Image (cartoon, rainbow, N blue to C red; front, side, top):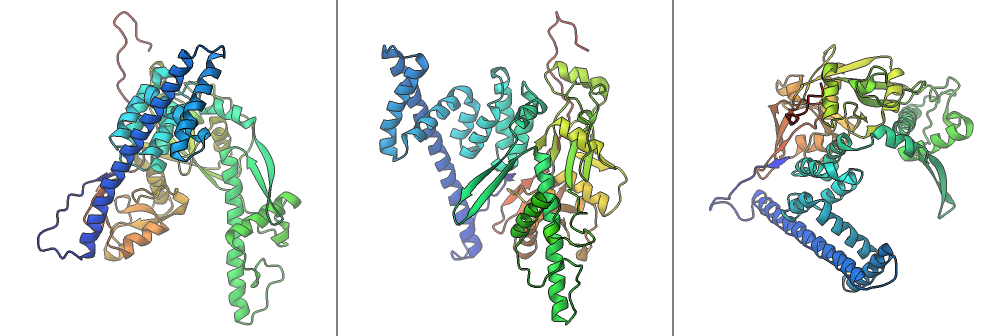
Length: 495
């Protein structure tokens, strides 16, 4: 997302012109925000110095305490001093001191970008949190790529790309980490005021998405049936005894999801709100997954041995398989520390482990193959291209989020929008379509914001003040061909 605004108001412009005022406010706000970001970087630099001072005091104190304990005591003392002037908890200040010191010493490229206001504090937290699992040998490479991904993007939209970069360089794959995390899956309850309690569940991302999707489908079915019952009651039509519609049912979508969840857990099916024909019980969960080809392979076929596939069946699922580079190159990438088995992704970009991806793929009744460019990773086509369903799948694969700048809502929340309205002759084809959430779909049609297609899925948005913003489709979960450094002359090639 790049801003190419350079509008300069002419001498004849009305000083109270709303567009001119908005341009002035936008420019002033941008300068102010950049100043705030730079000051936040200076604050972190001060906190890092405070941490180093604490370490120096601990080393010079000559205390008999263990080194770690001495540093902690000195840091507590320094943090207490700073907390008194910051009007904050000394525990919070001590934590910020430690984090700022890590930023200064282990993430110098990030700190420089922070100081230059090319990224903000949220980007810094993203890079530090994501890079925590990486070894020191690859951290510099990760930093350079992560800072480039964050520059000009919101932290939310940059998150999936930064996580992909870290996953490629991580010493342990997502599948290995997921297996360990799954050992901690749990259900718990917490007391709330007013006679309420909260039920929590930690499980695989695909399982949680499937549960939520099924409850949502059931809730929407009830809402539609209730609306129909209201109309029939107004027309004097007697309610259907076997139906699920109730003209007096005014529950919200969240309330319906909660009731249906309770019914299912307590009775084994949504019997409290179901019918004799089991309309709600027949609804299956829908989870949309993108699976790289190498990830979907069985372990004895994959070029990079991953986690074994466990037997099982998945709930109703739509899976997407990407066409990757030929297998004969697989060992070549592994030799240069490029993991050939990357995680699959749920719709919206959240990575999932290969075990889950393979189980879901094995339970799928159909595949949608997405062809990607071998160098850029851009979406080229999907199999069985047809208007409507296949075109929508292609756009979901290409965009994977709302295409308005700063928005990151996933495909299931999108409208398929004609850049040039169909009513004005705009064709229903990839080069004239883009996924927009309802909020930004309305914004495009009912405000002065404009958009045009530049090709290859790139959109140019123009604001009411004339500012131009470029939004590129997010790179898919794919493997791109690159030219690694050649091996030394005295070593033979690994392939």
